[in-house]
Length: 632
Image (cartoon, one colour):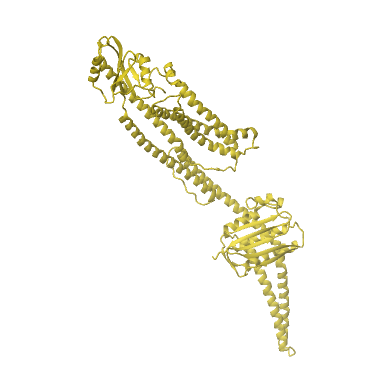
């Protein structure tokens, strides 16, 4: 590194450096700075990763896997930033310490920039490798329900990683370029003044002091800031501008200049040098020389300007590319979210816009979309088939009750038919009989009318039964229509009458809504849901007779609410957690678990409504169907 900083030859890790600065180069940069940074890094590792160490040693007794994951996901970034900031502070403080004795500001800045650049490269390498090393533990702590607790932007991460690296790289390049430029220019100036002094003075000729000054004044100096100096035998120094030479410069003249062919340096990493020549003045040994600053201002301005422009362009390109990369990944994430939320709707294909790994990921994602769509359609078809089977199974359970319900009105109609037949015969025989009065004819007509009214009543009831059964028997996916609360309750009552009677269960109605209140939707689907809930309420009593089920019909600002409440066995917490999410049943082999699952799906899909429940084991269950006002 001392070559990059243009340290004077013979001053690195030598007695000269110890005599002048107190510490050698190695001690300065590898003991002070690296010791501070290494101690900090070790302390930081202890603080940041003690959770990980304790978790691996003791399991989840003190720290949860979520805390460990959070530490591992966020620590590399914090570690990276601290590895850049702390060394910068340490270097800045270290350069100001008296023991280092950097008397010239330029030297300190150059060293600071170079060291921080090196530490930034080191921080980047650590960041990249630590991310990969932590993945092993992240794999161990992953769970199926693991979520990202703190989201990080890919573009911001890339900028955070690349911008400091870019700055460090460009700074390092600027330092190296400027150093080489100064080195080349210093060599040219050194050769020029060496030639001028060797031409003007002969080391074997004796001069007077006035002759020396006259010859030195006649030299054509390259810069007006270049000055000459004269050192007599007693080391008294006279300069052309009256400014004293620095201690470093004088020490270098007396100790190291002969080893470097008369070349002298002002300080560590300072762009001021000189050339000396030994001559004889009045039979005494003198040293004459020229001190010259190596002005690289114009070049430095050009380099820095180029650096700023290049940094701006590269930063914009990195930002644009990282944003483009993040957007492409976000598109795929949104596509996956569509698969998760849109069920069997048409998925939007993602265009393939690159031929790299992202392009391959997009192609495979589109394939997954097609496969997922097919699987979802198959699942829905199977679900529809299972729901139809459940519907027909429920319908089959109603058949026995329906037959019993129809048996009584059919027998009544048959009896009425026999009575009407007898009355018709009686009427036919009585025609022309002088003993039959008009009042007798009126009585016969009255009896016939009564039997006819009875037949109409029974036929109307049977018609309602047939309508209810037909509604449940046919597929009802698109049969949306207007219906009243009364129609809904009548159909449910007809279909459940026999099951309630057989179980000796009373269904008590508490209707707080006008029975003519109109709803819109698939009445058959709603009847099926209500009857399924009533059937479940009956079964909650486990065959115990003389129980009741309350059926409440209420209305709020948005919904008509149908509540079926039993006072039976209730549901356990485990069953409640699974309800509506899985096809769960408490009936053992006698249940499929489809009833409530299908009911929930029907209310959601066909009415945009909801089903909620309250249950307590041993006390009963209440299901509430909320149907929004739909005016159709």
